[in-house]
Image (cartoon, rainbow, N blue to C red; front, side):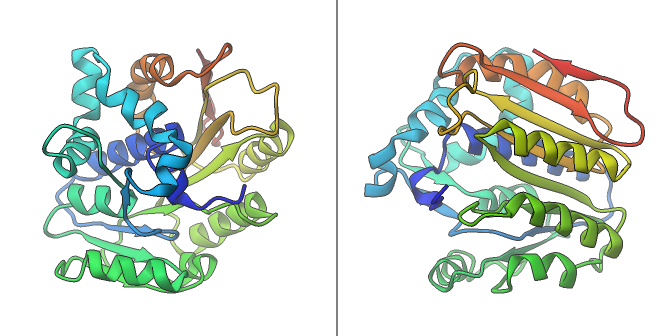
Length: 289
């Protein structure tokens, strides 16, 4: 994909990923015990939407730009409030100038007793993260290879964790690495909640990826996929997906209500839809809108 995230920050895929991340973190906070968030591909954490990269593609305008202007139903406005409030806090004048990456979203949503581990191998991006969180004692920035980090950072001392694995997809084989990382992570910490993000261009490798996840026979494993167009042109980024393992029990019901409205807002062509597939050993249904 040649995926340098500054070009794509705030696009439809970010909206889906960060909305779900916010929902998962909100669920984790319902129990008093502390938890840890591990972001294996953290990036720079904060993105300037006026920069050359963001202006060149303008993808944020059809992502977070649309969502911030949308007249959401009261129920969905409440569901998305933690995420959208984070965006608003960075843009107090109302105009969208900056967009939070997952590091800022996570740091805003965790409690005082929780911890955030940000891992970024790229040296310049890691320095940007260190500067951004220099005064935040809840946050630790690391520079490990992301696939090594999944193993070395688990199990967490808190015995509760959300692990976000969000590769750049700049090199072949990332879907295979996602599956391997999930297997290794679960061997180290079976109770962890894992979020695996992936882009959707060619349908066949994505379907094979989902099939292989399902064959692992995991508890509460689900896949959310959002298509912003029909996907006939497989040279384009037509959608994005998240596999969530040890997904919150409440997630399916929330997404069933949220996604029809969100897909309508983000659609860029005919055939826009979402799938919410139960991939785990407790499979019950497939939802398609």
